[in-house]
Amino acid sequence: MAQVKVTKSIVEGILSYSKEKYPDEMLVLLRGKKKGDSYILYQAVFPPFMFSNWHSATYNPWHLPVDFSVVATAHSHPSGVKIPSREDLLHPYGKFMLISGYPYETEADIAAFDGKGRRIDWEVVEDEPA
Image (tube, rainbow, N blue to C red; front, side, top):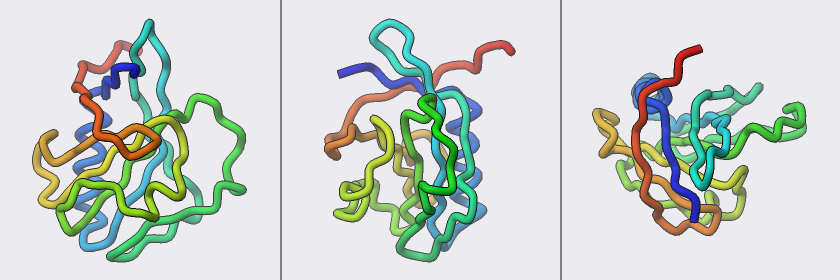
């Protein structure tokens, strides 16, 4: 399994947006690039016409252009439970899924999973210079 690295600004953004949307869920798509046997997640994409409430967040993928750089999603669980739900597993988008759980304070409030819902290790890396 490839190693997942997430830039510091993406981690901060996931936590911040999760807090902003609370008590509703939030959802973003994550662009990434493969470097060796690692994936670096470096940019968030806000899906147009996203809908969220306290127990789900969704969007219509037909409203998105084809973008092969999107390799992951991130969404929040206001309950604090950082485990993919059955619905999460039925609608994967990309290779990885990050789930942030309330209280959205630190990277420990984020868990990463592969496309089958198995927890995977991940790490925070510094943002690359533009």
